[in-house]
Image: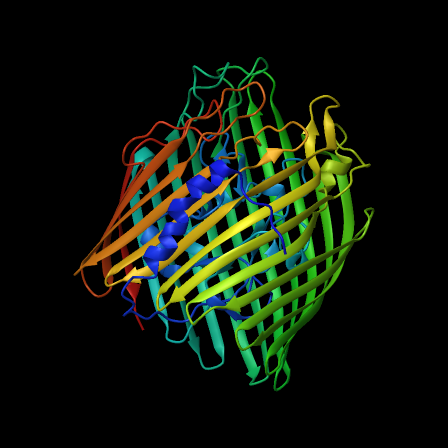
Length: 620
């Protein structure tokens, strides 16, 4: 498969990343790590080093080393990921992965899509607290043939805590800048055939004034606080060696203050919002034969968003998205191949309005049938996925993923892939009484990739050249004041990620060089940086563990009529000291250099912030 070359200037900046491949291969490889198994890249269990799509995993150890609180902050350190926020914690945000915005990035929590049906196109990553998360799998690139609509830029799948052998209990408390406090506790374990995991958490902060008063008009100068209460429950029972049933339930409730600026705002207005995310799943896993596993899931997920404006003109808006998903999947393991197939049936709905009057109430069905094959023989591996989606009121869509890997030796692998994707407009884009457009078409995309992987012991390095073209982009049109298919975009670039362990030091490094542009105008896409880089290191020195993380975001344009955003670099520092076998003292400094930066023009981000905490973990 052919992929167009990068422009010469981008290839020039790619030299450090390619040189890093050569340097990595000269490391001393004495350490070993447990085998990592992922499921998101193919909907089947695979060893991470065998996966063809560019995939990274953040396990519970990496989460605890970071000491971060929410999902978006952790993902900001990963290759190709950007997070922008128009306000303080909890306010409206946008996720970018490989230059694709929130609407084109599929987020799953325990397999349940978080896709919203309102007019924001946003995904509420900022309300998912890491206290409830066991691991995160990030699959970059076009994988609609595996997961369906919205996976143009990739898939982020969050797995909440689950029961494991040996009972454990844990708790932690933290306090720090901006009047921040955080508390979480839980237990998990397994007794005979019964496994359980229960976790509770809460976070609150006074926050800062998120509005930059010299750049905004009539914004309230008060502090914009945030509070999040969260919990997760996972119960499972093995009825026999061939059958297991289970229940998962997650809840995140974020309440936040935010700022509105403009000629219709007043400095005394108060703006408050809340986002409540609830997801409940029942499932069964059965062995239908020696090599045949079947899984049946039913999920009911809701997200309710509310905003209140209190002032000269007070009003309340509400929007509730609901997704009911019935999924039946199968996996057959043969000698040199793995076959997978399944069907999905979704009911998507939205209720939205102002002051209790629902002026948007819509529902639609979405059905899919899919199949996949993973073939491995000698030095060759291949992955094929086919999927057909039928969404009520819209044209059906077929998508494909074709991937090939060639092992040059036990450490080096060449990888190439071709994939097509689609993205259906949310119900709000179609039927909102003010901005909806029932004539919208779904977006389509094509991605070609070539890459190389080096893996040995605890080290894994992956570098990928990618080229994605998206047609019929869904955007709000300022000329017609409604949503339209207004343009086509392209993004091509080089993406490199490394993770490994050397002696007592853990290291993660990433570099993304991309060129996201609007093909009609030739202009760089709004708020997408051409260069993203990060490095995180954690060094253990006896009972003390020190960590540092730096991330760089290049310059990028803001929305029309606003100045461009300059580049910025952020440094975070962490320390952990083992007081006893079960007790650990924690410390963290975010934005240690007190960098003044913005992810959206007119809105401040946190200054230097210091946090201290104490954690307890009863080990089995």
